[in-house]
Image (tube, rainbow, N blue to C red; front, side, top):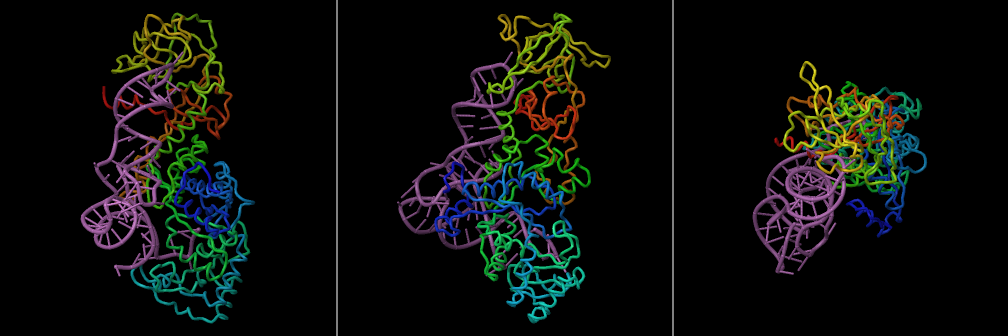
Length: 557
RNA sequence: UGGGGUAUAGCCAAGCGGUAAGGCAACGGGUUUUGAUCCCGUCAUGCGUAGGUUCGAAUCCUUCUACCCCAGCCA
């Protein structure tokens, strides 16, 4: 049954109808079929959530299949990263991961069947001639001079192709369909080519490799896939998909196309992502600024937030561009509920409490989460000298200022109310230290005769731990870096401030015991996570908190 | 008339002949020891255009328009 609280889409409607008519015997078997030629990105996450989600919804299953028919571009490193990413997203594929290359023998036999049925032929047109014979979008193509070879001749050549008697590019095997078809994919498409290269799975066994259009439909059929979900650009390939399966009389999965994900301020094309990595505009595929699954993970995105995001954007056939704000909302929502709060001073300025004993120390018990008691408490040490953020003090405060200022009082989060008496400056006129008084009657209670302006975070200087904090911002300053511009490429839109490294941050001591990858809310600053790779105190900003003060400030006071 | 698709708010998206869901964003207001969260409220007489059918149309028909994809021995 398709009983579920989750909203459906046009694909679930198709499946519901299939289930009513008993088309696939009520079974649902989907597949996620990446080519292992790069790392998975947020666009793949949409496809993964869709395919595995469909399987879950209908109590079916989903295969992970590597579409590895073009070995030159592929590698085992990519295969491993893809498995890791799919698993991390929280999905389980049916049985062992599958490879199109597992079917090379059967695919070869299918090609032989086509030849024997007079539906495929060996063609020795070179690439340039092939293009000429293909025709154009508006003009029909013309038949290859090799189109009417005998079955025997085609068989002999195909065997010679397989046996290495041809060099790369000398001959191909083509399906014999219709050179005048208005659909270019049907103009005798190439189904096998000669390529003397090592394959990461099959080694040197083969020097002929099947093309996508021949491989994909048959792999689906061999696995008894019921619904073969792919992106819109394959719509024109569906007639060929159906032709191959009908001609070979195999099982016949239904190809269904949906719109791929586009995100503004982001590029999601493997070619461009690879370029960012190769040209070192970022520090690798898992750079936290990358829209790759591994980049998002290192940035601090949770798999739940990505799944929620994919669910919310929906599945349709219309090209659309989703606002990255939606992604940011998804991670804020998850982390607000799940991340423990902690105090970290990003740009420290010293505060000395003139009326606090020099040798005194206190331990405050502070809640880890404002709405979840089960998150427990932690000990936060307090002493005479503290750090607060430079941005939390202003000598000449703007209107509506709710932070520290001369003669102003403010609550130290989880601690006392303090009042600032004096700002000490260096020769350059910059404030380097604040002399304040604390009100000993204000621990846990509000003062009776005056009202603190606001609440700021802090850390005890003596107990603070130094940390490096990577402040990440969006990688591109242009909403559509991917679009075609006359004189600019996406590289021209790279945000020069996409990464700001703070090396002087002061974190509260409890953070020393954090785990790599663990997410926190640095109170009043944003959500951060301990870096997955670095051993020391290195934190990455996942996303800022929503900031209504920034809006007020921007409007001018 | 090359073929294949898509058009609902700033963005995503429900809707499937009975009178425009929801989310994001934005904007007001309330609560708050995070300018966060949370809560309350506002936000399409309108569904790409122009006609038609109908008691009734975003939904059916016709016209036009805009945008996306296709001429790899890539997937």
